[in-house]
Image (cartoon, rainbow, N blue to C red; front, top):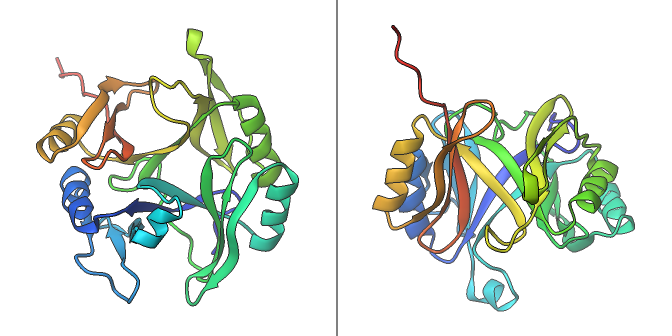
Length: 262
């Protein structure tokens, strides 16, 4: 894996009903999620038509009994999983599972930041770079957003562990600052202070679509709920923030409306 340390490299949906999730997300994003798992584990690859963005994992009754809930997660690529897990612990985070190896996939660990927001760290077995994150590609993840109860502490944690920097911010009045995150040379998303009326704390992911109005309609037509938008954001893109039929929260981002030529 040639992605820089701290870059997002994979996105994963945990769901109790992969078939229902497949039907919903394929309709909204134009994905082609596997109809059946490729191996004994019910893990289905998400094909965007231009490479994979991630996978869908079935939550078994045992996993749910252990506290696992339907949600989206991401993997951050790291140079050394074991060393990074140690830094996470030293900086107040948690290692909840691992480090462990998956043959042919890589070494990984399931971790959480000091505010309890979970994610994975991973060193992939392949020398090829992941393209799951792409700022402008439809179907890929275009934006990563952290809603956290302690923004300053969270920013410091990710800077210490992954080398992230925060080159700019957007003041949002009573909501505080929307602080942009740079990983290596890329601005990959932002952090903000969580508000209970908006969404629970955690990482949220916005996937690219060619038409945000069509995506919003597909969400509604397939049993989901559009909780915010469509709306324009700084830079001209348009977004929605939505819930799938099982309540899992996610976002979509598309290009802004083109002004008619005179």
